[in-house]
Length: 627
Image 1 (cartoon, rainbow, N blue to C red):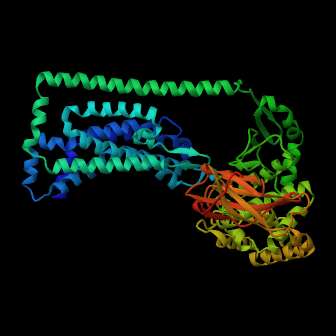
Image 2: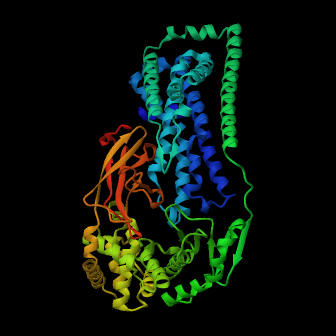
Image 3: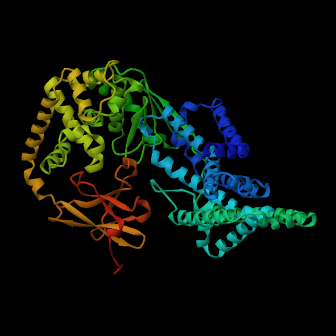
């Protein structure tokens, strides 16, 4: 019986199903006119947001307005009552079938975008971000439910349904202008997902209001449908009279145009206010002309007005290329493209796909260039664009780049600051050698930046035991066609070392021995370095971390606190705050999931030593007054 009822509903809703399938087919056909294998989620995310909310609401309302009332007006409700079928069951089947038809295109489009991302993703944007897709699909599903249930309820007004909808929209806009809280009742505005800081902020108040609308409209529509009968058709007979029908049609058109005019005027005024505010507080500049320079081994792209800081790179870039190639005992290969427009937040440079992005200025641009050039060479040795195994060994990858950078700058692969930081980490038992093989755990619990000094120590131990060509041998092993591709963590490291003819256990033993030697040499300094502990405090729209130290800060040192939105946030989302009156403050809008993730640390002697991460509930913060 269910299958027959579903087929009946699909026959009645086939125009809307055809529309959804057609739109999805057009999207697929459009891809053949574009570079579809470059459409990552980061470039198509906007297509998942509110641009289609209005269209989805009106289509859902149109389906709902005729879904129940058609059974009553066509006389088929009596036929359904004669079947072994309750009205509740018929109502539920109609709702489920209509929802599936209406979501055919939005969900299909989201799947299409996800497939494109899986095809075009790269090392810097590799994850599918299912939580991000889910957070943007959920409002589409909810707005479909709002439009459908409102259509079900207002459908009992027959030809008055659209006029009443337009009048409600006008009333809602007027009320929202006077009392902004009423905007939560507008499904298009209330369900828009906003990007706040580094994460998505869901409109909790709007979602709650819309869920209430769905519940009330759905229950009311079911109540009317359950009690519907021949005596309920009097309104239809009245509205079918020619004069009344014409009057309703004119009034509906007028109401719809009035609603469109009111919302368009409000949108234009808001845009004008933003433009006025922007023009009064900011200056407009013409974009700088692009600049291009080429050396024997690099091609640099930069803004022409920033040509002066580029000169140092142009003079010594080829020397850096040769020195890095010499450290790895390779010829270097083809030239490298360098984009000097900048890098990701909290980084000085980034290397991917034989290309480098970095800032032209900074304290040591040549060192950054050496570091990123090492990444490019390592990627080439490990398989080029198929170097996924190397990306899963970040401690080795970053450690090698840091070791080469320090070898060229300080003439030693592990600098004095690296040794001090490694000694402190060893003394406090913050990260073992084996933890370096699990980057996710290291970043989640301790400090992902430890891959630089600690990774350099691992590389130094490897070279001391197996010679200067050991890193090159390991990289070539990762690039072999027969290297296993399904390994992770310690198993991956062990396989890479073993197939290269190295003993990972011996290298890690040498690593631990070096750290203990440096720990003994710096014992007095480590003992005098305080360890901070933090607790949450709250003031208005800010949350703070109040620090307590177990000893006085050494001269020239300062306490800092690092925040991140979630426990799995990438490095680019980290924010470091200095303390004021022993409290580091962060806007409450920058946190996610009602939890504050923070990491207190001490900045001393050119390094920052952080404690382990803590993620505490926001409601555990103590209230703090301004006095």
